[in-house]
Length: 310
View 1 (cartoon, rainbow, N blue to C red):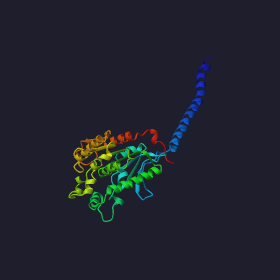
View 2: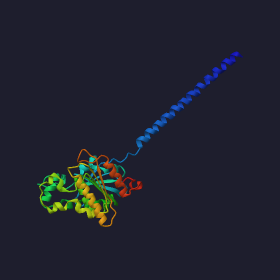
View 3: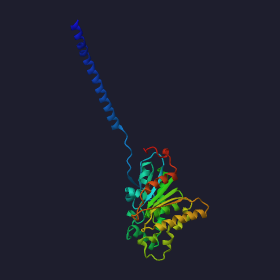
């Protein structure tokens, strides 16, 4: 009897070993299956669309660039002006609010500014010196830029890229100057944001010694105050910007506000003068603030920016 009692536990232990082995085998098998499933799921996951620059041309021959995720429907659109198409859209500093908004489904658009890149004419200087050259020769480069940009908008709306009811524009320095001019020119623009903008060409060193020039005076942005009255205008500039003139930017916004009051309109021009010891540059945090402001002006919802263009 004693022998049987000692033998029974041993038999039970021996019988349990195969069962334990089976359980371990099942456990390991499940782990392998789960790992394989996860690997397969990772491999088949659809990648997010990559944002990259696309260079296109209108039927009228205007070169422009697009920056944004391809969408299945007309998108809220932000025009961005600073320099050439490439220098503007491929540089996060000059994209400004566009860097944030492109991730949210906005389409960013740019064109080459007058006397910049492909828009530099034979025999004329480049950049702001080119602007001075054109003004000295009686050429309204602002009007020419407005017409080219309007043709780009026409093209984008007709092709189904742009939501005609949700268009904003922004620009940096000289680009801010042209952005404000275009907002005054084209009523399709819902709002304009300008970062450390030129507002009066006569403040720039490139225009020193111009003398009396009616065209130069006419191109001052204060001359567009009546057209900007009641429009959504957002301006940010440092408190010691001697390159383009902090005081001149303040004077412009005050003139726009006064014009709105004179026309019986609600003043919608915002001015942000921020401490900026670096002088002529975009104040810290301004691009993000402008992105939020533009989003509010265009009243964009999540459903407006969903979907990928096939």
